[in-house]
Image (cartoon, rainbow, N blue to C red; front, side, top):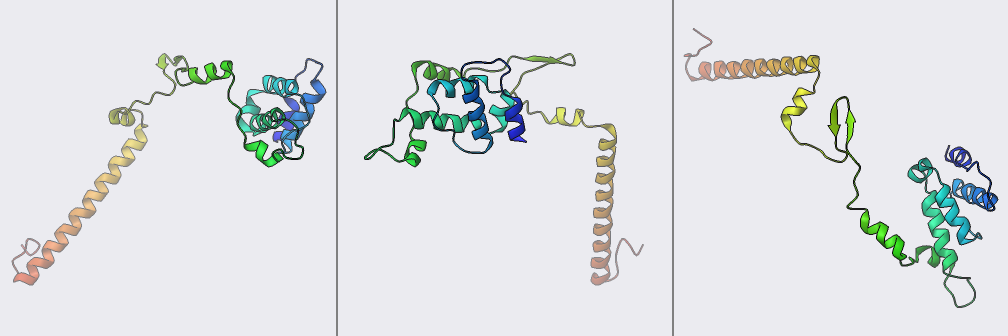
Length: 176
């Protein structure tokens, strides 16, 4: 399914790196780190990636790992192995650092739904609002179950009192 989504997410507009971007998406669809492409191709693949892929696949992480591996240079004698390059983290550029600093402060704007203004990410804790939003049949069922529980408790208490009175000498409420 992810491979199909990757194929459908390919940009329609042709560009110089379209075949490289396609191959990068195919490698991501197979769950492998796409290697051997230019940093420009990786950047273009990330820019053109559909939100669905960014949200529901490992493709962005795989592309970033490939970018880091490519930025660390060739792996010759005396250099780090490919496994080590995957774990290396390059420091963020000033533009990336600015974006990272602005993330916690950014929030989605309020949305008007059904005449009410909804603030995404805000949870109002109010027990009364939970009961006000329950359907009436469910409230009736809860009231019925509560009444049944009270009847069972009353029956058990009355039975226990009756036994205690019979054992104490016959003076009991049940015997009257």
